[in-house]
Image (cartoon, rainbow, N blue to C red; front, top):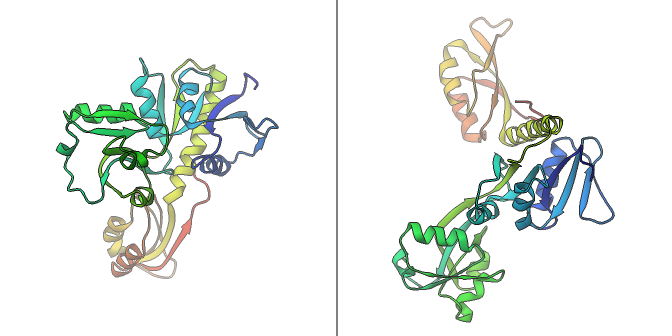
Length: 293
C-alpha cells in the first residue's frame, strides 16, 4: 500500500466486517477489493484498508502500521491490559456491534458473586476477567479458551464462563444463564498515538469528520411543525436532544410560528403525541441523509 494514503484496519470477516464497510459507504467512500483479499482500496478517497483478524487490529494501530482501526471495545480493552503503554486512542463510539462480556452460571444455580470464590471460570478474555475478579477481591482460577467457551461447564473444565453475549441464545442452549456484566461493548474507531505525517493527519481528520456525521445522523431526525407562540417553551422542552430550534413567523397566521429542529435522539410516537398535546400541528419527521458537525 502507498505510504501517502491512510491505512485503516477492519475485520476481514465476521460480525463487524459488513457493518464497518457499511459505515465507510455511508461516509461516501467507494471501496474496491483487491485480488489477495487482504487489502481493499477506496477509489475516491486516499484510504487503504487492511482486512485482518479482529484481535490483530489493536496491534496494527498501536504499532502505527495502520493510522486508524475499527474494532470491538472488548477486543481493544483486552489488548490494552496486556500492553505496557497506551499506544492508541478511542476517537468515536460507533454504535454497532453491541454486546456484553458477561459471567454465566448454570441455569438452575442460585448465583452470587461469592459463588466464584475458589471456583474456575473459562473465558476467551483472561485479562478482562482477571481484572474484574481482582477488583471484586475474588479468588478464582481463570482458564483461557479460544473458542466454545460455553462448553466448559459441560466438559468439566470450569464451573462458570465469562463470554460475549448478544442474545443469550447460545448460553441458554448450553444450560447457562448470564448473571453479571463485566463490560458493555460496541465497535469503536481508534487512532494510533504514533506520529502521523501532517498531510495524512489532515486526511484522517477529514475522514473522522465524515464518520462523526454518519454517527450523528443514525438516530437524528429533522422535525418541522407549526405551533402557537405561546406553546414554544413546552415544545422546545419536549423536542428530544435538540439545540435551539429555528423559529419563523407563519404567514397569514398571527401568533403562530413554524418550528424546525434537528433532534439527535430517537423520535418516538409518544414524542409526537406530546408535541401535539402541547399545541403543535402539521408535524413532519424526516430522516437526515448527511450532516457535517
